[in-house]
Length: 309
Ligand SMILES: Nc1ncnc2c1ncn2[C@@H]1O[C@H](COP(=O)(O)OP(=O)(O)OP(=O)(O)O)[C@@H](O)[C@H]1O
Image (cartoon, rainbow, N blue to C red; front, side):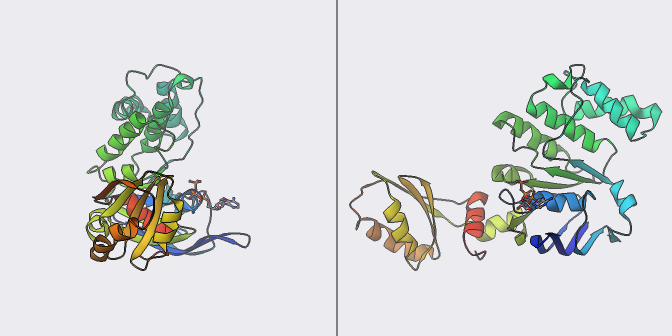
């Protein structure tokens, strides 16, 4: 288990982390969500020992992080946002190089290399130079490096953000395969569909604060309310602004120039009144539907609103 209490990180006067608290249960996949620049990488860099922090407390399995850093670091694997490799090496050569620098037991090295290549689905490409790999393949090789020393804690910083849908799916499947292997995964991302596929628990972060930490299924049950999607014949900015001023409307998302999503504070009042409001405008409605919300909707309501769902 990882426990983080009152963690503060400052760069000069700028408080990147404003006293954050969260805990990560053993063996779970923990999704750390937030837009770019909210402090995700900073948190990960602190938890993986790359940078220090100003105040607060971090514990891994009850052990204080500062006092037991060396020991804790041995149980950590980290895939950074943009992993860098010696591109003239093949995957086999590169993993053997990692074995060498991490002083991995000589007798079992080649077995470990083979098993990791299999795990990240690079066996067929193992003798090709890394320089010729796709981004997805490089990310998978980075995962193999992070897993090399059998970490108990695996930190993945935006592992899918630079990948195409196929690459993302492959990476998410690999993360999913780690479940049940006695490994705790800390996954930072802003791709919410990936989180929905693989995470057990999530924290939503914004501007150095944690807005919420919750079991994903509970979060979905508790907060995902229906949403109105409305498409107009013409541009609808004025309508969006007017609806935003209504007491029973919580938030409006401009999907595009002619389409909005309406998040209601009270669903029953919204159902009774929304149509009546829309006909006041001389802009015909060409599509009106109520759909079930998803994690992205929760995220929008949390981050764009005042933090209260
Ligand atoms: N070394 C540094 N010196 C000063 N400010 C920094 C430093 N590193 C990060 N920051 C600032 O701290 C804030 C959080 O950065 P961080 O990289 O943690 O965000 P992030 O949520 O991981 O976003 P991204 O996904 O873009 O990496 C940003 O405003 C960033 O500019």
